[in-house]
Length: 335
Image (cartoon, rainbow, N blue to C red; front, side, top):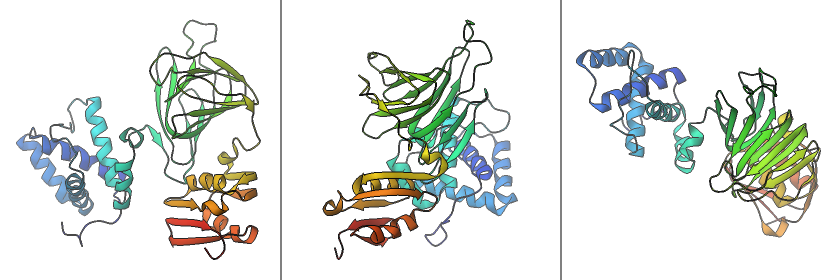
């Protein structure tokens, strides 16, 4: 396919999954003559099928990372977990626009392959089998593993607000399954609660308890020895590393504002404000050190960050420079 023919947008999710399945089967060399005929008929049956197949070959050439030895089962063959993951990875890339392929290279594959995830600026709610509700903030990824002994949610990246539901059996029953959240730094055990968990990029996590209580056990999810457990009650919050829990402080009213699409700032440094706002918009949002200590107060809507940036020069002695829509710097006036 020539550069002019390369598709600029993603393809339908269902068609992308089918194309990924066929791709791994054909690349494996294990396809039977009958399966190769079915593959040819599939490609010829709809222009979107052929476009998805061409896109799969393009992605393979660009990445040089798709394992040709993974034979993906099509109808009637057993499905292995590693093969499912490989197909899911390719299907995600097929549904993404080419500009998003750069993000794949920069992001851990486990985030792209998570059971539930949100894009930058996106928020959504997931309801689990027991009735627990989880709201995913911007750029968030979670895996859900409910088993016979526990209900486990792995926070791969981002931030979640959890409203836990009771298990189907009483807590005193040996069959009771505790609700656990795992981050890269430890394990959080919910004690009938509503709480916010954020996975930071600096190898720290943060938890804010809004209702009930949460037991924080450092190291339980990040490998190595477990640190001393700390129980946080409603209205308490703390950061924690893989070795210890930090200072406990009071939860502010802004802890779950993001779940309502709001960013609340009270005398916040401009640098910190822009760092938080930048989580909700694609690209780069920078703050010149000369204006980093200016203070911001107010309640800002996150659905569209453009008007928020437009309002800054009206409230502060700053200019907002847009090299492109995705490269923005806040500088001193005339800077």
